[in-house]
Image (cartoon, rainbow, N blue to C red; front, side, top):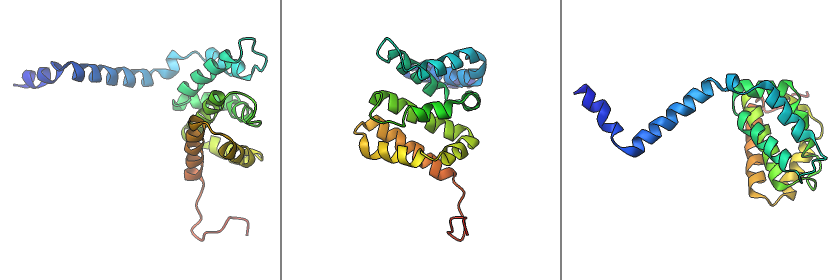
Length: 173
């Protein structure tokens, strides 16, 4: 009876595929740091930093997308924060007219992942003097749905991590 109860659900192709994907996701997250060479992360950071790309920015977009993907893992996010990813990503957003909407979406999404995964990243971000003006400029100046979605995700993550005062004060009294 036990064998039938285990085998019967696996006879459904969709259930098998779903189970396999679930196992792969769990295993890959367990071994993420072991599977990603830190040198690759540093190479991707350098590629994102490179303003003089001869390929029209495709290398920057590819590197940024890879960084965005790995920034969801807490260990890899810590590594990125330790290696100056925050100032690099913020620097890409200082002039919203520069760069593509896709690059802005990638940078803001990566920032949101880093802030969610690394507690001191939120503190660093909120202490950056230009952050409010950069984010308001993106919020009001961008018409790209992806960038705006990621910006709202970033802002909600930052706001959820700010300390709340019971008296409603701002802490400056």
